[in-house]
Length: 522
Image 1 (tube, rainbow, N blue to C red):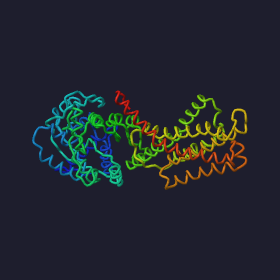
Image 2 (cartoon, rainbow, N blue to C red; image 1 turned 90 degrees about the vertical axis):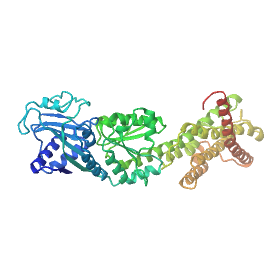
Image 3 (cartoon, rainbow, N blue to C red; image 1 turned 135 degrees about the horizontal axis):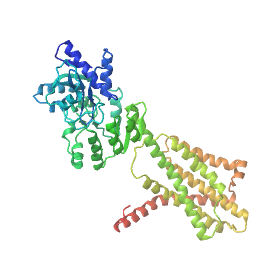
């Protein structure tokens, strides 16, 4: 911290003590903690004060009443705008420091109206009335944000706090840019300071970030949304403006994630689609956030995004697998009921086949790495995937159940051996179709996913040759004429699968177009 004071050593010490007392609140913010830490290392301790106005994000300043006067500390441009006199040179100096990325505070002083600067004052509350337009309780609580500075106060010193930029900030922001995420900074600090820091971390890449003072923002949400499209950095943002900014981005159709750590961020974090609180955030802020970064490291966000993408993308794969089974099970049951035929396979068959083509592969795919960006339309894509595979599987099994007994001369009604042969053949068809669907879900197959499909396909075939497994699951290896019939049925199933992949989407598009013509929305 650097103190820029033009008075003698005693005046500088007096000003520094007042700065300490202004920051020494019950719950100081980050800037206050930094100032206190710097001054405590120089041996400063709490001084005598008679009243206090705590810092407010809405006012941008705090104040204390001391025996030698009323001291105010806060945002330079906000305080100077409320003071009488021309302090343009001070503002120029503030902007010069801010351009270097420093956080600049102004310390101002009002002399007591009813006492000399060195005489202790017993009229602390009355003195505070000369500073603000309102009465202050002796505890300094419940201070209204409408309090005003004493226009006769005089700037005494500028305090510089150097911002420590995290080493991983630039890399994290670059990752978000590559992912098509636009990052904006909204801060209560000087927009010049925030803009300088944004420039250092390359918030907008090689382009110069556009900074703006939030006090110039319009109140109308639609107009605010239009302004925000061309702004990257906002300074001197009020708590209610943060929420309005999120609402304006929503109005433009953006999906918004908001990070913060202060109580003044809570409303915006709650309003955002994804609220992210730092680990050192206020309890109220963490309570409304969906994600809390326990160690307060912004660099963890790419990992958070990656985990979210993995869950969503893999959930889509797994849901597609299970929905295919639901579709073909429902259609096969319907076909059996309508045509009064024995069920084409046994429950133990579906246990064996489901474990190898759905259950175990789904477990592995759910945990697999997946970096695919989230794309809206989860349910629509899952249904679009499941219908062709489910319909093809159901038709293949039912066609075999309807046609094969006539071709092979099986009496599946009264001959248990013929019924067992038909069910074994239907189980083989169901397994092969399950492998087709698994291969389609696991694409691309030029990596470990291809090996996954091959392993489970081989496991299904090998299991049928193991006596204990074959007996337990009622599996049969077709021979002779039954083998020929099974091969023909499998070839037919492959053709049906290909036709369904081509025809079902066309039928779906035609049905959707017809519904839209009649006023229905798909």
